[in-house]
Length: 87
Length: 321
Image (cartoon, rainbow over all chains, first blue to last red; front, side, top):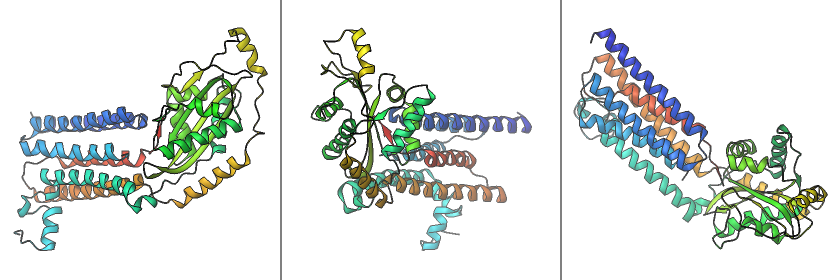
């Protein structure tokens, strides 16, 4: 893969990430009064973020357990905040 | 620089990339992020405990600007947009709504049916109000009338009650008090169409909190004919004591200045802001010094955390039933 193709692929992956975050955001906002639905969307959001991170590192960098854990705990922190805010 | 244990060194070790943390701030290592996650959940449960079991709960109130007149005005605006006649206030329904709100506060529940099995219709019947159809909408923890009405209109079952052509009268109560030890505002709205005859209760559809009673003395045709003859009270029998009780409740609500939700939002946003600053600073130094390391992508983390922060800001408290 050439440098420009690689850059293009990385930009595309970030575009996918941002688009998915926006879509999740719209759904969470629209169904914020439905706790079960909201929590389910939050879990899906966290799972998607970890999957995106793993896929990105497999394609463009080296994947290690610590990197997977880094994505898992960033996702966990964000999801815990969204899920427990209305306790 | 070697981590020497001093306060400044500890600060740098946690928040800036250095040799002591493998050129990656300790707070964004998996261990640091796990610690933050544990602190987050601990903080939330501590806050919940404090509001329930300590004097702190008395000052962690929920400030609401909702009044029954605003709710009625906006409900009728929604009905007018749909070409329906506006609802008129009935004092008995209003008293039933107040009693329902007080009952939830006193018995610590949040449901259409009380733990003792008391359903909404019993509160209406206790006021000697007979009806051909009735419904109930509940909401709690909303700060503004507009947000609450919007939430009701976005919920199919609540919307159905608001735009139900059968209902002609309503009673709305805005009840401030403590539910499970937390200062909150409950809104109870009863809908009904009055009947001249004593209604016989059928199995209520509690899921939608709407019921239609049937009279054995009325054929469907007679039922339809009797509806226009049932004269609504036009609010003339509104109990002055009820009105003043609501005014006092709203005044009390203004004393409350900070809700647990607001505290949670502030703390979470502070943590997210701190992490974003650390991540951006780390990314800046990585680019500046061309540091080679194998870690997660800071820009991705910043995007995710920024997105979570925006959601924390725009998501409102408040639940419907």
